[in-house]
Length: 312
Image (tube, rainbow, N blue to C red; front, side, top):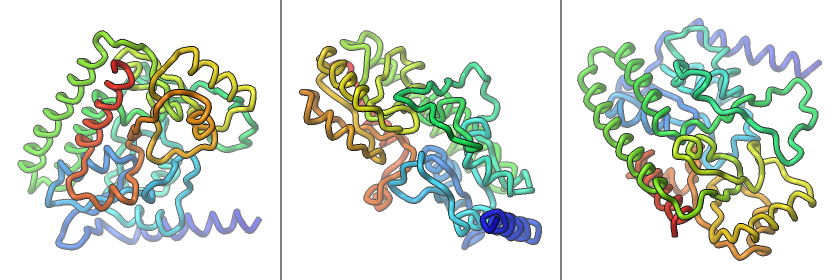
């Protein structure tokens, strides 16, 4: 009962902030923006340029499968000028946050216009069908921010929203957007090049985050753990190790924010070498300190990794 009262109190506080405050821009009259996954944060920064101040709602290095926003984090989002997330269907946590923001002008579903056919289903694996009670479990794979084509739609949505909120700087937003789209097109072409006639058709990775890239560029993924980083059984671990050894795959991809005892076991019991892959959910603490990091720079490294995993 106490938890119910606590949740209601939090909701009331947030709604009071929202109803009592108009646009609360950051310092120097910049638009204060919060985003979920790193690509949307990066797109908002690049399109908005000097006119925006952008942060992620997620702490650096967080595994999003276990993330719950704090009261402080929710209040910060509620007081901002804009909250950017993928869609209500793909992001249940952000849907909850968004539902507390009454003014639609203060929130943006970046890919709400994608067709249902563009979304991949979340397949339950490794005994994932546990009893979740009333907790929401994604029906679709949420990792769509890895798909360059979907990201073009997200970038367009962000640009249009910034123009609407701040028409005075429309020219800047339009020019920055055109530059970004050209570079996303370049990433798309490089991914097409490395997957045109691959030496191998399957990529092994620490958890099932490659679905959209695999679907777009016609290769397969095998996750050591499943979509929600759930731990497989001992029998399933042995089966995974057997499959890796039989496939004689020289590499396994490991992600920057996904840790698992299972991946350590596999490193020991197979001959496969580890490769770094950035799933773009969040930056690490070290990456947050880098000045020149961007969606493009991280994807360029991912392309090298995928090329090695598929072709070397």
